[in-house]
Length: 171
Length: 272
Ligand SMILES: [Zn+2]
Image (cartoon, rainbow over all chains, first blue to last red; front, side):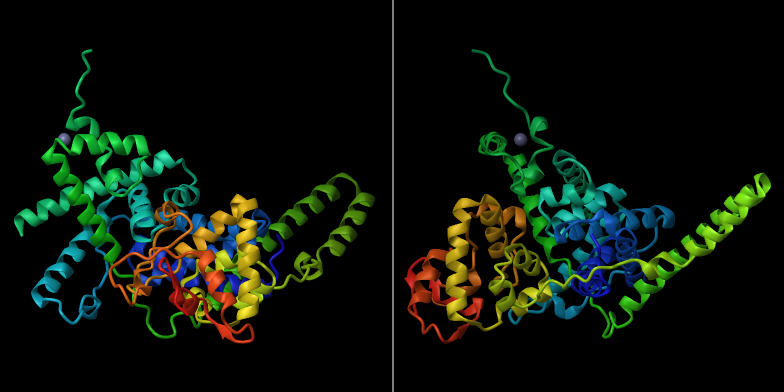
């Protein structure tokens, strides 16, 4: 479809936060996440003939972004995640500070387990379990079958669960 | 009859999917039957459930203030860099054609050069980009235009959603739109699905946004614990028909937000 300048501005404004968040969860740092999300929008503009409606815009952006992130991860190789945790994130009035600390530590550990997953498993887990897309939506974004999604998300959860239980046993 | 009793091993690949409610009813039933007799697998399912609870709690990034200020400009820069490279390539191709033609025939060459010169006016300058209005982002407009798909996509955007839910809309409009929507959903399964998804995306007070997949299972409704001020921790199923009834009892000239509408109606009837 033709995307006039004004409509494009609107598209960027309404999807930018979701795209940066998704990219951040995939690549682990904000600067790269911003860059990759911007590329996704640029590609939409340059390939506007590939989308016919808003629904397709929604999926096209995420599809492109996920592919860019996977490429980025493969090129970059393994690095330490830059994920940070805020203290106020767990503070509710009646929470136990020790428990909060443990939870923070656990979440830190969770992130390194996710980081260590193979790109396909990682991306499926993040879309399904962190971003909350349905199995169908995840399959559409990843251009694969629903069974493929289920298989990858199972493997990812199994890997993370094993590692976390090992870690809990040591800690 | 001698059947082979399925072993834990047969279920290993299904347990995490079972915990997440991703199996078919038949698969679920067979896993559940095994679980009732197997403590080890039950423990595994519990571990998956815990894991999923923690995964949903992993915080989204905290973005520094002004993070998006230069975002669009960055997009444009990237577009320009690609378009620049493409233009260079096109020019190169043009030169190649010309050299080739010159090499073959002189008169034809002149014609081609002229043509190339004419064509070299950048296509994007003359390109007719027909004006298309951006989709409206306020609830009143969306309802006035009965743009259900637009509403659905707007609701999927967390920032827009909050403002849509809290936008005062004339009660009259809310009533006619909802009535039409309810009528249409019986005829068009797509509208029904859209309606369910819109509702499912509404956040509860605890900030739990039900995923689309999970919420589709809760037909035509949301588990809006957040709205249950009178009976906390109990599930309330939002009933659109009830809301419609409630709307007939409000002054049609007043305005109301969807948020307020949800507060006024629940399973126990309307409480206006
Ligand atoms: Zn078992």
